Image (cartoon, rainbow over all chains, first blue to last red; front, side, top):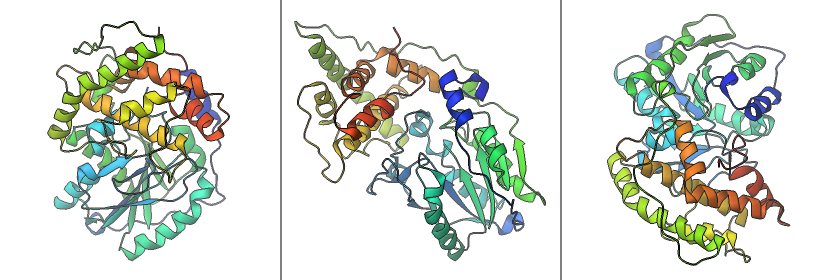
Length: 153
Length: 233
């Protein structure tokens, strides 16, 4: 299951009919030069540290993932059963590329990885997540973040 | 702040029009494509971050490579024989018996997997592996089990427990030699050829008309993927 046309019909139909938010404007912030980019990852995979509260139906908040999180401390409690989790079970970077990001920082391809990264649980109406997302934007700026990498699941 | 993103469903990105997006042809759940392939993941990540050099947007570009697993056959046979001889039990009893025996057989492989990878994703339910089979199997009996997590609804505990169950099975089997770890292959195996998969279908069928609304939602929508409504014959 990769491209829409290769998906089972029920999945394809569901995705084709899923309402998407649209916006009147298309803002576009210029990025700093590569060596000055401080990058934070924001995931919708329902990830959190092992001792954190799990996500549940309708969760509209986020969890904090420190950049030095131990691999064994990162777990997933997304409510949907309709995406592959076996990749994450074998290698967390297949949906949360924190190690790859830190590799790029070591090689000087970006400035740095942010001190904190974040995960929402994507099976919630987007507009319900907006207040938390706005709070998060301010927090990221306070962490010196100037680039956000959004990674879906 | 400038943003860039990975896109798994291109038609959604076309509607939303974020500033920068890299569409990738991978399965949902694998936005960076290939597990255990740092070079491939880095190519995806570099392509997504490379969109930050664009001066005008919205930008939507396609990643040109397929992930390695996409060229593999999804069909394989688990080398460990999980079939067990059945005593004189009811069908439900046989299923639960087979399920518990399966978990026992896979336990060593799961221990090996956790040791090799230095991690396991099992544990979100807070129910240990020793207690997990009894908790899940109890949903086939007439009396619902006690909720091990009083802070959550029992249905939420079931959802988290089955997440742990699925993670246990696939982490264990992907540690075995010769396991083709493609998403479809693993899903076909789990839902179609294990007692655990059969058990989840049985729990779904038993509770999909539950008087408990939350349990009904979990049974109908959160145990079995919507693309697999019937257990393969």
